[in-house]
Image (tube, rainbow, N blue to C red; front, side):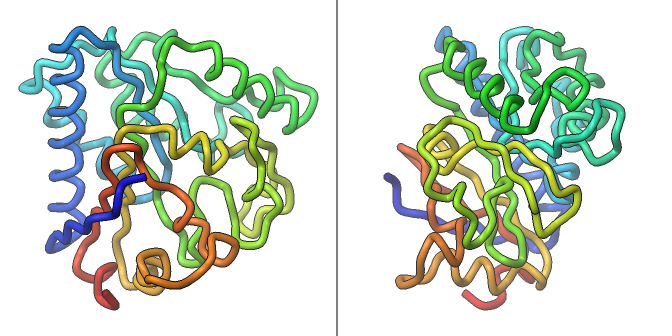
Length: 241
C-alpha cells in the first residue's frame, strides 16, 4: 500500500476546486489511454462541494461522461427519493447535470427493491464483482470526527469483514441502516483520496495519520491506495498535524 501524503488548502472552497480539477484530469487521462475509469464517490458536505465544482469545470475537461462508471463507497439504506441518499445528492450536484447515463451510475438497491440491508449489500457486492473494473481509478472518502470512513465505524464488526460490501445496522449517525464497501474493497483503488475540512475533523485526521493507533479505533487508518493515498485538507482540518 502507498504511504499517505498530505495536501493542505486555505479553505473548503479552494480544496473542493483542487480536488475537482485533479479528478477531471485523472478521468480524462484514463480515457485517453483507452480505459473506462471507475470512480468511487463519497457523501458529505465537502464531497458535495467537490461534485458541484466538477459540474462547473467539466465543460473544459474533455471527459466523455458516457465512458466513466460511478460507484459509492457507502449508502444510507433509504428510498431513492430520500434527501439522505448519497446517490441522490451526487446526481443533483453533478451526475444528472452532466448527463451521465443511468447505466454508468451504480447505486445500492433501496429498501423498496431488497428484503433487507444485508441482501442489498450482497447485491451491490455482486454487481461490483461482476463489473469490468479491475480496481477503482480514484476512491474518495470523507472522514467523520470519530475517524469513521464510508459507513465503517470504530469498534464495529464490519471492520473485519472480507466481503465486498456489508450491511450496517445501529449506525451512531442516522439513518441507522446503511450499506458500505469494506476496507478491503475501498482500498482496491489506484488512488485513495481523503477529503476533510473544518476543525471538527482535526483530531480524527491526526489519529488517522499518527505513527501509532489502531484501525478499530480509527477506521480511516485502514484504507490506502495501491499507488497513491492523499489527504486533501483545509487549514482547520490540518491544524493538529
